Length: 383
Image (cartoon, rainbow, N blue to C red; front, top):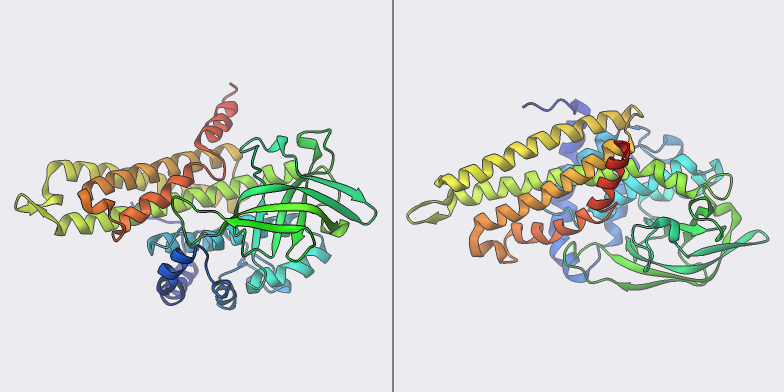
């Protein structure tokens, strides 16, 4: 079925970004996978080429086009090229953290932070998860105690994407530890603040080029002017308001990664022979691939409608949760079944399906686990 989501401007943008990926990302992939981190220069090159902050107003150096379809193009091209895990830091920067600065930042904060985010000179991250809390955000223990014109921040975070490279980190803190959700605020911490330390770059199953780090805060003095929003205690509401876009971004990546893996598997089964015939000529192979192609098409059209709803300001938390749950589970099924069709070669690291398999596993966890997505959907049913 023909997709109708994109217009000519988006396809022109796609062509330009595809060329950028081929020139600036693909050649460095193996080095970055080995090093466990991408070069900071990747962000500045992306910024100079207009691939960061497409929705940021021109006054702050951005593209001035609040159209999430451009973000979706970036996601699809990263996944199609096989460097989706590597590009996670860029999509987090664009799709997840910049929106907090745009929606909740004061004019002064926007002038201070957005130009660097758009140019790629300031790499962004968000720190919510703590070692002992996982999905239970209301139970975070990182505190920010008011002391005159500063907050004093103490605590720790983990599993922070862009954690090593990040210059600005939106941190969920408790400004009122006696409260649960109502005690949460969002503070922006900046590289170089005394007591703000990065832990190890975590060794992961997949997405090796993406730096994922621990952070610790020991008496970090953060200016009150770094609070997002006019008042304390708004952090949980702010997070809830932005989670639909985050989850849609992950859903888009899941579908695009599944599509890319299916495409490469089709090429493989047409060439690989067993018992004197191409693997793809066997009925089981045809049936498996027919099922996957159908499921990907259906999921793709659902997330396309979610993108339209987001642009219209109508994407609900429930619909975004459905997209995130279904598309990441689909991604897992696709890479697993495609690896099986590769036989023993699928288990070899030199084959793209092997990397896709390892990279896919986390998508059912970050941004809200599948179980949390089902809980959101279930509650929406009045249960």
